[in-house]
Image (tube, rainbow, N blue to C red; front, top):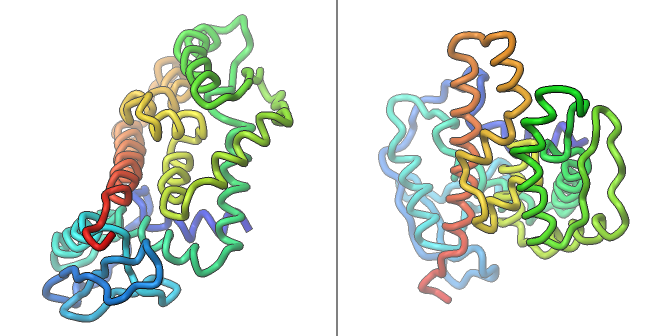
Length: 266
């Protein structure tokens, strides 16, 4: 089930897969204030040549703020002869948030996925203490773990090797509380960061502005970068992968900022 949910959420984010070739079928994307919306997060709609855009589940693409709607329209208008979904990350996140509202089972799966990531978080992983990698992890990750525990009220400790410890009850309750308090739009943004960074800890530190995207990306790749330093890399692949992560996480951060911007309809 989780694999299906992941593909549903992020199949259109930047990836190494071959992009779908869909010819542009519209002239212009515009935005318009929704008339008497019943949902406070559905204040603004996006149209293509006057026709309302729909999500994959056939729901109306209606978003909380004119800034978010304008950004999505900009992504549509920037397309050339062919539409490249990988260049439309804000649209993807908005569509996913809207479709989650129509199916609570998807939200439950995402919440469980986030909790699962925390248990096996990249920041918690440590190599054998006798290794060079362990010294790097201790230097770079221990300070971030300390900040996270202090800021968010956790008591997490590192895991060594494959010995992953289950979350303590108080940590389990704390992450469940944090996740449950997010609306669907915030949840989608946080989940996108986690999926790309493989870290709930780094994603939440970005969320509260305690960590920049570039630094979080480097921290999420400590083990891989260490292996590359030891054994070399495939030319071009490493840079592309790192840039892909930064692009996706930056888009998720921007999305969170755009949904917090108040609409003039409030």
